[in-house]
Length: 106
Image (cartoon, rainbow, N blue to C red; front, side, top):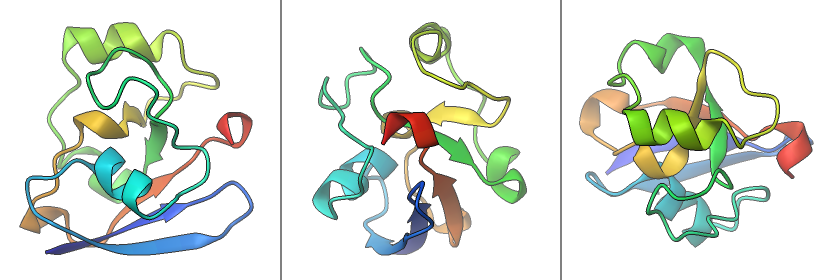
């Protein structure tokens, strides 16, 4: 297990013990994090699991693949640290990962 956190737009923090190799999105859904709807179920076919990755962790993630970049075009308020949480696989070196839910998504 790896501890990650989602920060909702209202500032509520959701600390989650996430199984390794699961996606951040799966854990958000399992813990009812508001604003993470995951309409496509994690198949990278929508942008309803858009998050901002804390700057301390951006470099620890692989660059988004073309499909994810295409889907981010449909997200609101995209920033350089934007990612789709369905594409973030949990692993031990991401301990303490913080993901913020965009305000306009909630």
